[in-house]
Image (cartoon, rainbow, N blue to C red):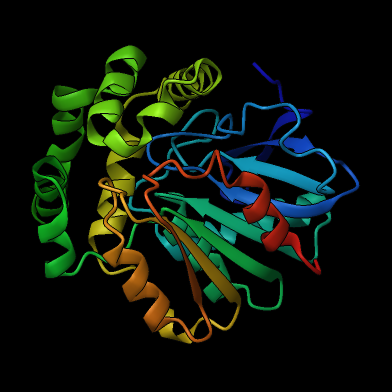
Length: 288
């Protein structure tokens, strides 16, 4: 397992702790990476050479309630942008890029919307989309129920998660992800990927399933901003065989955001991040 070069917390104005880690070149071009759901700051590319030569200062962050970041009930996507401002001010980063994987995608778009003078580029990889009725119908049954409960009785969602696949049971959660992402089996069965994922899930979810449920609530409800007003340069990467988040989500967001582009990876599933990491990172920090 690769260890981060830096692993720390800062205190926010409301006295919450926000945890972050750093990887790669400390003098490189800064990129903040927002993890998927349910994951945390220890999610990274497990190949030690993945960042070599890219000149990237790769900063990962625990969202509230994951890992070592304090939980924040009823949080919002735009509130996440405020946390990012606090962190980047602490790190002395005036301008930076962002990238979001899966559940991190909406968080990257929130920063692209709210911080146009600071975010250079936003990369969204296998990102969760706006849950329109059509998009919800394309989800597998468990996700459909999650969306409906998040909208009507959100207090039930942590119990549903614990019943159907508590991510603290990392081996069971790993098997569940394998079953939901058949196109990713070859990637997920790599020992270094499996070990990194399981260690990250264990750390990220050690406090329970509240953060997982809160992510679900945020994705199911209106996001609180109009993606059509994003002026930051945005690019989506999405696998044509992604069964976890159907590609229709990426297509609709690409159409809605001015100037956004979509890179469709033919035959790839939800975890294309690992095989296309260097290309994504190079694009995200280009000119930064």
